[in-house]
Length: 253
Image (cartoon, rainbow, N blue to C red; front, side, top):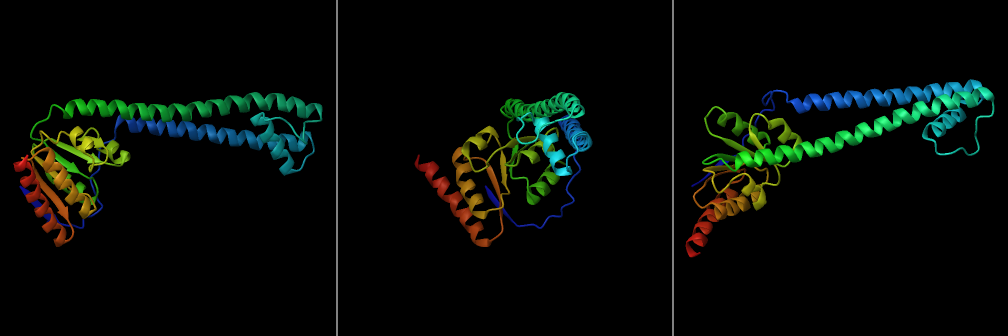
């Protein structure tokens, strides 16, 4: 069974999804990193002012000396000459190194943790999706996809959403089974359980991709019901032709 529906101009109100625990962690990390950056800038300003008065340098030369001292990349033409300047440097360098090292550690930790968390969440979702039967797969979570999800969430059907953008997948987690990937790839469809699904709704923005997916999906699961988005009538006809050709190929094999 193949159904098509015309392009629908959806409003952008969308749905307000509940906050996830991961979002709280990310917000906390962002605030922490932002605070460290502000502290480093503050130290740069203090260093500039300090060298301005202890060494009698211009503002630019004082800024240059402060940054070089903080980054510990070695002195060139400018070095602290006065005793006060040297004492000030002895205080400035350890503080700057500690803050910079902590900042880099936090940034690296955030990137690694986010990547690791995404992989772990994906594996957990895959295990749950593999147990589903007669579920509905929605390809694409754009404006049309969101509208479709809003309608289907009122039913008792299990939904699996395929979306290429990781940030949208993170937004959906906790409410639906969401998989990050290219819906036109067979491996992604198999991960979404296309062989056990009863319906697949294709809402990709490209009509040609939707026609191609009709062929791919029916090849993987001949009994699945396909509902595809189509902006132009010519692509609706091509979708029907693709379906008939797929049925013929299945009968021949």
